[in-house]
Length: 504
Image (cartoon, rainbow, N blue to C red; front, top):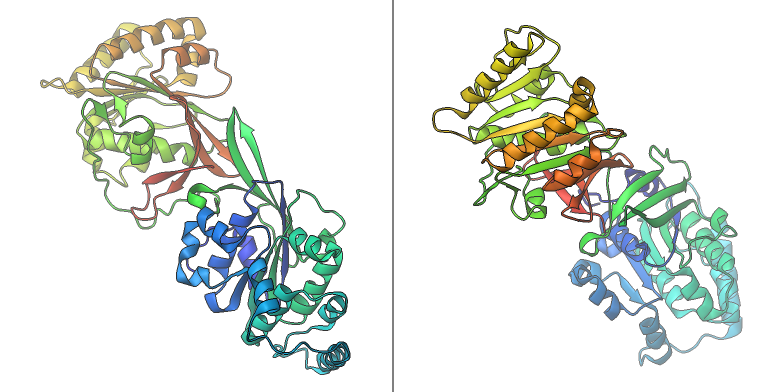
């Protein structure tokens, strides 16, 4: 077994059960069924015990579409149906054709052997009972060859991928039910073999009951951007903890995304990501790339948060932005979104940067407190003139004598609640104008239902939406327009670093 699993864990657990299991994969054309099958073969089976029967395209075509199959281990598993047929019919080494009577005698002997074996022990011979019935009508060289190769694996567990079921049945004039039942009984149930059946169509209700498990692949759109999902319809004797997973076919590989759960047990101090010329890095190289290098100096940038997004999912993008700005010894004036407390932000941040840096460079405006003994909290629940003076003093302190740039971070739900939409819009116009005429950076956060949303979108230099798709945080750009990217933990750097994986 391989260490890194890109498949839903339920599928791995399903195939890890004792004995053989069969899984039927369905979905319309182009949903990624072949890619899933190849990924499953690579990750869940060893090279010398797994076989891929390709009937839709030749192995040469597979290598063009999936260059990673040219790896020696993967290449050995591909069984091209057309090539095997020619080998069997025309090979100089082919044994003399067996007579019809001999075939029946052998079938009977295999049947008697199969019912006499100790079923509690792993089988040492492949059961050919049902295959013998089918081959009485017509030989099926590739299937017969597969049976032979699986027998060399026993009593170990083999894995077989049939891509596709229709490709075999149409070639030999079989019913799909007959083929699946044959392989299910002979191989999965009686010969310790895991089988993946790939269907060429999206639905096949008449045969789904024959397999131990069924998964469905689909693709749809969100605001004109494609997404893909895998649906776990049934997995016999396996708990389905999450029925649907977001998936991608990026770089010709199948990958499903587990629920977002960064590992904060093994973290290290944040190291500042350098700023490109005339820009501020977001702290996330993949997001920098979408922006053409980072946030432009003097720009206003907005993140719209979907209503089903968790705090941790949003922080996966916001945290690196804040940490990287502070790490460059630049100040932040912040109005937090509703439900976020200044102490929460500090506790989260000082896991990665020194406490003194946070206290020195961050000022969080608290509109509901008249006083605070915390340096990073700016209490504003006092007289108007006093509050204005406190804000100006905080700005001057953060900018310093050398006129360092600062970040203005604004949760617009709080501003709209405090000011009302009309006054808030006027203040927003003034704030954005000041930022664009300076070297400062503006970051705005929008929640659903705000009346300010359209005005903010019109003024923003960049506008991204962050949403949750099947418990995976995702991001896409409206300004600039981008596809959808899944937000995942950076496996090399660890939390709080993240990567953006294209959902293709």
